Image (tube, rainbow, N blue to C red):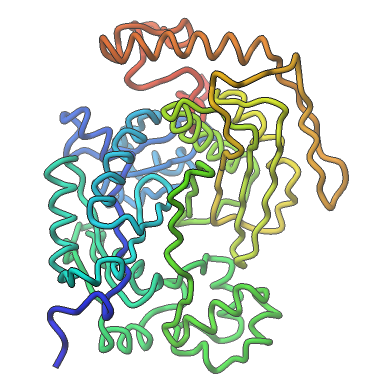
Length: 442
């Protein structure tokens, strides 16, 4: 008989993922958008979609999809620019609620978290009841829907959270269970039924390589030795696939109580193959981490970029400066220079931007200019310059505008770059667009 109420040792790992996060926040702030196909992203020729509501997903709109393709699939699609201060605000409240459940949690970006419930073993809670209570509290206090998965490791918890959420079937929205626990019987069933594409880290390119080996389902992975897999997908991915074939996953929930870095990572439903598309996505990440950094009254001296390819191999680049930054324009310029040093050997399934090496804002000494000098296996990297005057003037202007908006509302004051033909465009645009041009070519 299946266990209806597992212990924290039977269901130790919880994964919670907020539904259509950026789009959901936009709808919360503008209820007139409810029930309409909404996406957050850019509307220009080189822009991308960052988040799509379920109404938009019914038409096939997905994150990381080119905006022009999304508009062809859904002609009535409402595309809104990103407002990262609002996403960071809701994310912080989301994390505060998680922390009330357990301090042993690992954030993944702004909208999903792993929790290790074994930290609560002494009080012996019911993991399923705790998951439902967490889900209800997030909806009651934040107005956000979520999916929650429970399992014996990260693999099963994340697979379960995805299955717990609504999904689109034949252009119709089908509700999910909301909370789902993967017990031993379900593990066995899923290991027989799951396509390899459902596994963590298996993107379209890796799936295509496995299909050439005759592997379409997880149950078929054990037919091929790890050495053979490594020759086709690389040793790191081969090791992971060998573990996943038996449902094993040894990765711990990584808890970092002392803030040493701020980052935002995004794994794409469809991998991105062009440098232009990756740069647009990284620009939005730069804005997110810059706002998070400023909220902590700190600046960062080190800027890092992480790319992970479909074969599960990864590349990182970083640059440490003689002074700290907290301006998204400056951070984005460094990120772009770093990314341009990475040879794209295939499609990219994850992009991350991270800041570290923090200083208090009052202790930030800046020199007149600096060079980005990034070493790479391919040779000396591209250099770029940013002036102290720009960083200082941008910081002073931004701080003054942020202070006024905090007191009197977002539309009370703006910069010249935020002034459009119909007035101040604060609600839908904040200076440079994070996901690409606001409009396409005229």
